[in-house]
Length: 120
Image (cartoon, rainbow, N blue to C red; front, top):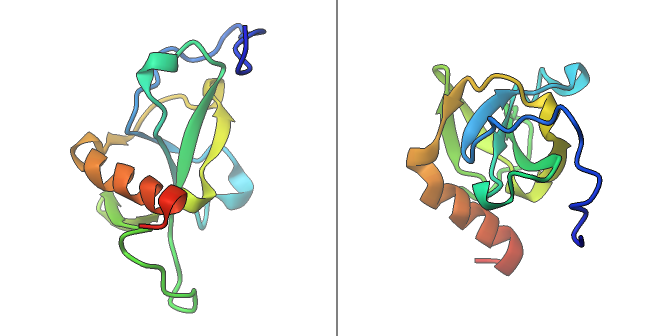
């Protein structure tokens, strides 16, 4: 079993879904990154991790990020920036209850990730 698929964690969360938004489970970064977005395909739900992208509150003093790379998304009435260049795996068991879905923005999410991978 390649690709890290062996040793699946008991108690992982099979209810997570691509493009669901979850509260950031790390209290130390929650002020600037209140949510994370699950971007992993459901085809590999059996893995104990999910690929997530931060949804960030970027201050006025932050460098201006290209909209194609970091598109704004609205969650709970707040506009946040998707940060695909900071995507990372997270244990699925930490993603408990989704607060929203941005499946309707899947094209923008895929384009942002493509901008990281291919530069356009």
